[in-house]
Structure formats: structure tokens, C-alpha cells
Length: 380
Image (cartoon, rainbow, N blue to C red):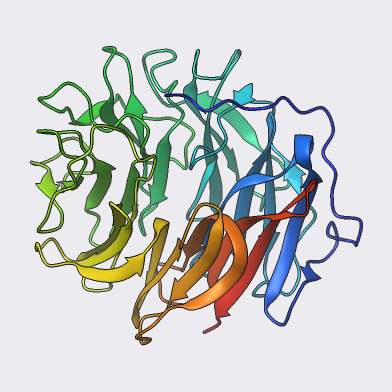
């Protein structure tokens, strides 16, 4: 299954000075970008670096844009367009990813000359000057068009190690593949197989996620297709991505499903080095801390995302797609509403534990206007 994406000629920014400063829509909500139906901004992602700067990336048709805030989200620099990548995969968690490795901002995306699932490579651009100029793109997958499904993830470790993971089709079936970089994304390693399902393919349209803990371990989350079930698994590497251990199933129950829910969950690392994961099973969202089988039911919903702080995990998800974007902070028993109508929320915090916690989401406003909105949830 492949999403279909519209070509774009012109991008329309919000008319109320979104280029120079964020527009405050409510007490805590900021509009970062706006476009009409054919030129809508899509699939925002966010990273918070060790100094607390906020880095945002999103796609618009065949273009990828970057914005940065160095004052906790009070103001954002004007958007900077990355070099041409080709037809960029967007929609249903297909879209660019962003990470900060030392002083280098790294953005990855899946793109190809034709797109629409006919081709597609993981490509990477890097900036050493805060997004003013960009180097690249360079190709990450070492077999051309192997990433044409358009689903991937990227993470940076505290020591600058980068890891990309993606659904790989080089053998005609969906495997989870990875590559690492130790020089800020300038060069990428030989591709390493993270997991191959003995039943043929992992879940074909659910995005994988990756996180690198402060201990340097790489953890990859993906939805498997095994024995008629579509369950979440984690595989880990303790040798900088050279090898991955046996994948471990999450949760005590299984989701029997002969289809792809197009919902891959998310993963983050807690301060003690253990992982925290969120995922959808049937109509419910679950949170699990560590790799034990016990998982906490958060409520009905889908499309969850997670970030962790010293206080614990922040989780956001939708009650429907599109629907209410909900937020559960670490000390709260019940979620609160972030947005009344949203798609694909994401959330990020600094691995250092300093700086803001930031959530972003897509929102449709009326028939013809689409926005990316942001809320700074906590500043420390």
C-alpha cells in the first residue's frame, strides 16, 4: 500500500507574519506554517538540542523546510528550504525526520525522481550553521530505491552517533534496515538488517522508530507481521549498530489483524537507560516502560508519540484520525486536550533533560486552509 501525494508549485505562508515570528492562536498555541489545500504543510517533526534550541522540519509537496527557535518558542527564524530532493514521501507518518548531532542539524527524508511508491531513497542533508546553508543530499540506503515504501525514522545519540532505520524492499518484502553515521550525516555505513520476519514481511505500512540512549545503545521499534498478528517489537544494538539482537515483543496481548493499521508507535529512552514505548493495539493506545510485558492502557486512540524527561514520559495521541490531539504529562492521571481537530501529533524533549518540551501537529482549518501548530509544554 502506498500513499498518493499531490505535486506542488507554490507554497502559501500564513498572511499574518509567520515568517518573522510565530502567530499565537491561543494562550499556548503557535502557528508555524499555513497553506491552501494543494500547498499544505505536512508531517512536522521536532528536535530539542542540549542547549534547549527547538528545531522543526516539515514537508510541502516536493520541498522540505526547516525552522529554528533559540528562545524557547517565543520566536522562530524564517523558514529555510532544503536542497531539492525529488518527489518527497509525505502523509500517514511518511515525511522528513530531524536530529541534532553535536553542532550539526541533520534532516532525512525519503524521495525519488518519480515518487508515489515507484521509487524512493533515504536521503540526508546537514547544516553546520544553524540551518542557514545545507550540504547534501546524500543517499543512506545502499541499494537504489529500496526505501520506496516511504517510512523511516532517525535519531542522534549524545556522542553524535546517528542512526536511520526504514522499511526496506530490496528483496521484494518489507524488512527493517538501518545505517549509522559518525560524522554528522556526511557519510553513512553499510546497511545492516535489523529484522526480517519469518512470515515474509514486517507490517508493510507502519513506520519504524529509533532512539539512541545516553548509554549508546540503539533501540528500534517496529510493527511485525507474524502468525497472523500485528504486534510491536523492539530490537537493540550495543555495538553502534553493527549488529542487532533478537527482537522482543511488547505487551502481554496480541492484535490479530490481516491488514496494516498504518500506525507504527514511538519510542524514547528514560534517564536510567531503559526505553519507553507507545503504540496502538486495536482501538486503544498503550504505554510501556522498560521491556517487560506489562503495559498501561492510556485510552482509545491512535497515532501516538512519546518524549521523555527526568520526570518521566510525555505522550500525545489522537482519539481519531483526524480528531482530538491528547496529551498525558508524566505526573497526570488523565490526558488533556492539545487541539480539538488534528492529525499526526509529535512531541520532543532534550536528551540532556534541559530546555523545553514541544508538541506539534497538523490541523485543517475550514475547507481550504491547513496549518502546522506548536505548543511549548514545559520550559526548564
